[in-house]
Image 1 (cartoon, rainbow, N blue to C red):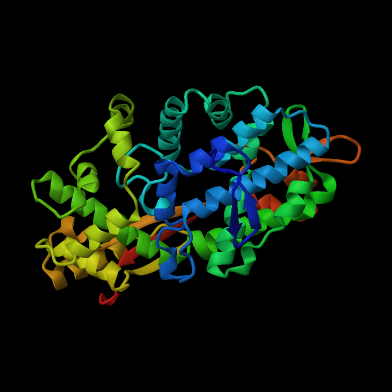
Image 2 (cartoon, rainbow, N blue to C red; image 1 turned 45 degrees about the vertical axis):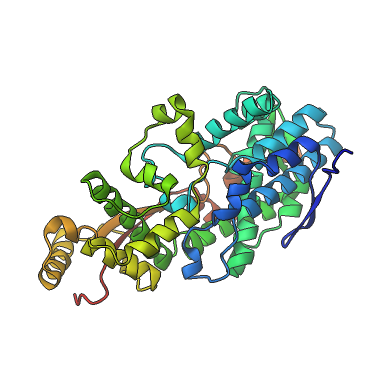
Length: 411
């Protein structure tokens, strides 16, 4: 008896989401995709917004649902999309985040350096394509922007894609930050295709303006919130210290799969040459890191133990943020105080005094313009078509510098 694979998933944002076909059902049930249930969408953001415990699994299902809506809208407007292209585009968006490592962006370059989650996503999609006997070939072409219908890739990855529409709405819902609420339904209904490019009808311009402003606000209020940055900086330095200790021969507790990445520095070439590395990475999730950090709270290394205890007990580092770089004299003053108080060398103090910067780019027209289809048939970039003066400013990258250090240090 054939198993019914036309299931529905009850999503807190959209209600019932339909799994459209058997292949997508099988992909969702694959161990690579099920791992996303164990990876939090927003890293350590729940230390600031306690409700932010949703996962990459939630997000991928939601993005697929929005893609179903977008493809339906385009077909209704006469855009030619074959059933094969529709299935492939749904697979591309479903698997777009499959390469994310533990804690999502927080540890993007800490577990493996120089290998982005997009690269791992591509490698995992290739592995799945072999397993599913070539059925993902078109999806991979669309994902990598190698297919003739460019707008299908733009729906997956651009300045206005189903990924962004879902994560803004979802992250806003689970954090309770209402500034991120956008009208994804209206934006999708306003989509069209002109000259093989995705465009937005002019009557949808205000929804796009709100989308861009919401994105900027969500970055400062959620993704780059200073306490989130403090927590994630702590997490990054925990991994950095653990890797340094492992490289010098210290045998640290770690789950077997995590240990492999602690003691080795794998490159992109290693991933491509040895499929076991990719398989092991596809076994890593938040629980491997969390269990290790919990164990390291009582390890012999004073720095690692201190960092882990601070994260576990949420006794985070103080963080200062400003639009200009911090003066060297000011940083040195803090470093000297930490060295004196804790009897540490300058190198060890580098784990307790961290200086870095973050960028916020709400809209980068240089990457992919959001084109507005005017009533007379002309295409205009949204920043030009908008009557909002601040939309021009949204296309500028804003940089903020931050300095983290121990709270018991008086400056």
